[in-house]
Image 1 (cartoon, helix red, strand yellow):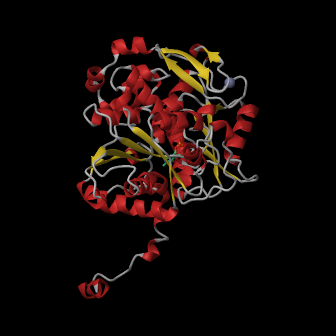
Image 2 (cartoon, protein in one colour):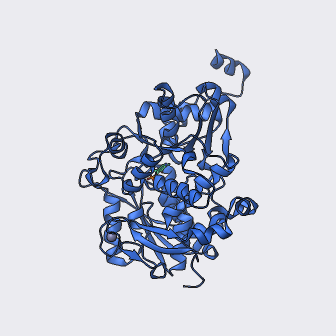
Image 3 (cartoon, protein in one colour):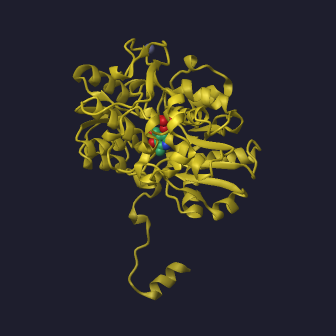
Length: 424
Ligand SMILES: Cc1ncc(COP(=O)(O)O)c(C=O)c1O
Ligand SMILES: [Zn+2]
C-alpha cells in the first residue's frame, strides 16, 4: 500500500443514490452497482488556507497535475514522472486573422506525454492504483485513454489490459502495444451498446482488475485529472476567465472535470460566479446524444444511447454519455450550449488548425474549431469574445485519416527540371 492519502478529501458521494464513502475505503464503483459516479468532496476551507494564486504560481510547472496536489484524490508520492499538463495556450495571429476574431486561443493538449489530454486523467487514476496496491488495470476506450493508461501503467509497473473497437487507429494501437498493454479489439454485437465497456465490466467482475477507463462511473479518481486544464488556462490568461471554452465531447467526463475545476476555483475564491466561462460541448453530428439532450432540455435519466454512432472523430463515438449528468449541469450553470458538427467541417478544422496555426490535431481533437466557426456565423459568439478552443488529441494518432498513403505524394528524381514540371 505505502504512503499517505490526500489529506483534503472528506468523502465520496454517489451521484445516483447519494451513498457516502470514506476516502480510506478506497471505493472505485458504488456498491449499489447503479452506475453512479463517486464524486470526490474536498475540505475547501482547509485547502483555501494553503492554496491560492501565489502558491500555485510559485510551484514548478514540471509537477504536472500534482502542482495542485491538495485538490487531487491521491497522494503525489505515487505520481509517475511523465510530466503531463502545463500545455501551451497558443495565440495564433494568422488563425485569428483567418477567423476574423481578436482573442481566440488554442489550449494545445496534443503536447501531453502520449499526445492527448487523457494523460491528465490517467496520471491520477494510476497514482491511485499504486496507492491502493493494485497490480492490474483494465480499460475500455477508442484508444487515447487506453494509450495514456498503458503509458502510466508502464511507468508505474502495473499490468494493463485494454479493450478497443475493431477499427482502432494504427497510431493508438501502436502506442498501446509498444507500452506493453495486452490489447484486444472487441467485436460489436448489439446496437447502442459499447462492447469494450461491456467486456471491461465483465473482466472486472471475473478477475478483480482495477477499472480505469475515462468514464466517471467506473473510476472516480481519473475524473479529477482533466480539471487541471481549467486551473492552467485561467492562470495563463493572467488569472482571468475566458468568455467561452469549446470542449470536444464523447462520454462527458472531460466536461465533468472542467465543471469541477471551475467550482474548485470558485471555492478557493479565485473565480467569481459571474466570471464563469460558458462551457460548450462539441460532438460529431453522427453521435450527439448529449448535445441533443442539452439543447432540447432532456434530462440525463431520459438519454438513450445512440444505436449507430458514426464519425471521423473516432474518439467521440461513445454511444452513451456516462458522465452526462454533471456535464449537463456544467453547461447549464455556465449558460453554454451544445454544438454538433458534420464530418466535412471536422476535417476542414483539422486542415485550418494545421495550416494557419501549426497545430496538428486528430479529427476528435479539432471539433472545437469547427464548432467555433458555426457559433461565430450564427452570432452566438462575438468576434471580439475571448474564447479557448481545447485541442485534445494529436494528428499523429490517426495519420490514416489525413493521408491515404505516401503514394499520394509525388515521387521525383533529384533534378530541377523535373521539379519545375511538377511546379507548373
Ligand atoms: C481526442 C479526444 N478528445 C475528446 C474526447 C472526449 O472526452 P470525454 O469522453 O471525456 O467527453 C476524447 C475521448 O476519448 C478524445 O480521445
Ligand atoms: Zn450509488
